[in-house]
Image (tube, rainbow, N blue to C red; front, side, top):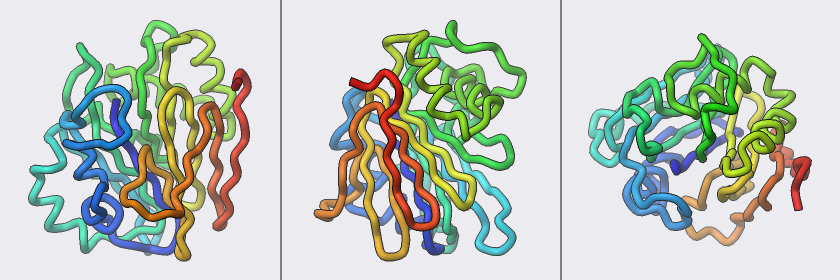
Length: 232
């Protein structure tokens, strides 16, 4: 369910992360290489980023497939940022297909994407949720608890719903946080920054897979991996 990508480093174009790579999110929207659940990610896309000047948070989301959005393709090369969270969506059966249901979600300070699925019955209702979909309600819970407690929140939700897949990716302009819980994540350390992605966007040999049930913390060019409670 879904694919996502995060960038933290020197300002680069959105296009260079999302559209240009040979197996980037645009290609992953119709031909993902490592996706375990679903074949397409055609139920929307979203890109969130922080301005180079001033650090204001921006989002561009759509319920249409990324591969057909020529307007975004024409503008993305001109958009630059040092912190990006982007996603393409494969909607869970029965969930609405609308822009507000598409990651990244935001509380005004963080951008957050959820790659996976969770039973909404284990999540507390929240008036702050941007949509009724499971990912939006989960995002609202994570924002309420605080991103410093992301690991504990994921473990708690995963314990309440053993079938949940809880790969989270979040950025606030100076930090990326991610979890692996039931799906794939890879990291690429580049000279100018760090990429976290559901799957590698090219065949560069420096991509490294993150083990399942880990927390990833990226800041100031450093990448740390910490096992989550309950990991085998």
